[in-house]
View 1: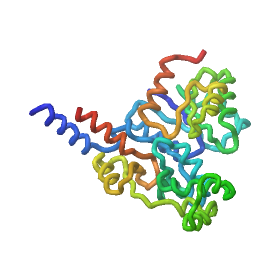
View 2 (view 1 turned 180 degrees about the vertical axis):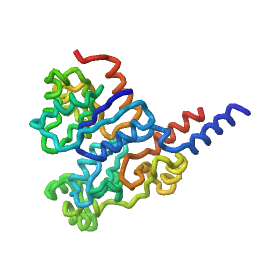
View 3 (view 1 turned 90 degrees about the vertical axis):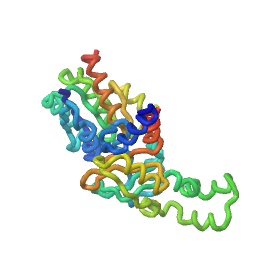
View 4 (view 1 turned 180 degrees about the horizontal axis):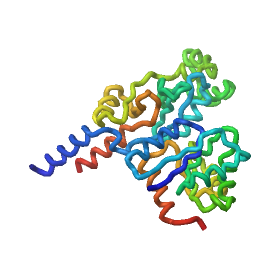
Length: 167
Length: 129
C-alpha cells in the first residue's frame, strides 16, 4: 500500500470512530441563553464564545432548543444593541432596514434562534462533518442521551485533525 | 487516581466535566448546593479531601473569588490547587482570579484534553507554597 493510500485509510478509520474518542475537538460547557432572554443577553453570551461564534438556546432542563450564530446577528447587531440616536452616526439606513430594526430590543433569543440538529458523542465523526456540510454551518452541537447540551464541535478543527491524519 | 472536586451550582457544567473525565483515572465529587461564604465551604472541602479543586466563578448568591480566598486562607484547604473555571475571559477576571489565590484559570467552554492536562500539571508541582 502506498503512503498516500495508508493516509486515506487512516482518515477513513478516523471518520468511523465515535466523536467521544476525539477529546481535543470537543468544546464543553459553552455559553447558553434561555429563549426568553433579550438580544443584549444573547450578545453578551456570544462575546464569551469567540471560537464558535455561536450561542446555544436551552430550556430550563438544559435541553437544546436551537442556536444563534454571530453570522445571523451580524446584519442587525448595530440596531439591536445601540440606541436609535446613534444609528445615523454610523451610516444611512434604508426604510426596510429601519422597519426591521423597529423590532429592536423587544426581540428575544427565541425570535432569533434557528432550530438545529445535534449529535450524541457516540455517533461517528463522519456524521458531524455530514451535518455541517448539509447545513452549511461550521458548528455542530453535542447532546447527551436526554438531549441536554454538552458542547460542540467546529468544522475547522475537525478538518484540521483530518488534514493532520492525511499528512 | 485523582480526586477532583467541582464547586459549581450549574448541573450542566458537572455533566460536561463527568463526560470529560470518563475513561480517565479521575474520581469526581461536586459541591453544587447554593454556596455562600457563610456555609463553611472549607469544612465541606476538607471532608471530601480532593487532590485539586475546580471552582466556577459564576456561583449564584456569592462571589467565586471570595470562595477562592476563603479556601486559600484555611489551613485545611490552603495547599490544594484551585483551578478557576469561568466563561468570563477578560483580563480583569483572570487577574482577579490569580489575585484571589487561584493556581490556574480555565476558560469555558473547555476542551477535555486541556483541562485534564492543567489539573495534572498542578498536581505535579506538589503542594502550593
